[in-house]
Image (tube, rainbow, N blue to C red; front, side, top):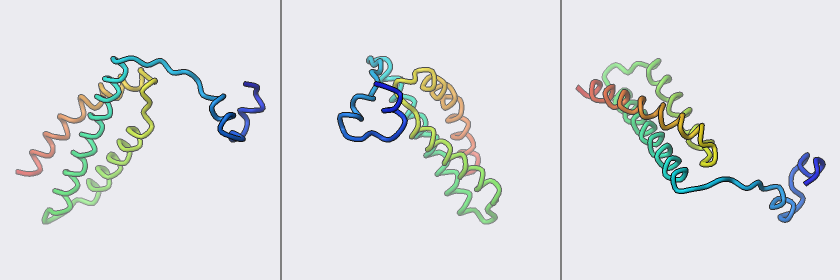
Length: 113
């Protein structure tokens, strides 16, 4: 592929296919990616539950609602942008959400009391 071809959008399907780069893939990468996606999805669910409980409370805290809403959106964007071939990003997401989800679950249990 020459540099001019990559400068603009593909002219046709053949041009598009010629720009694709091979990606490493194996079972371990697949499992790690799916685990990261699942963990992020769990965090999104926790944020949604926290928002629901807070919005239904007698005195909803608007600052907390905004913070959880923004965090939920950021998690959704991260899940959408995560790529299976980016093993470092997948590992970082798994580590971050492995710590975050239990914290969110504890916060939710406390809020429901």
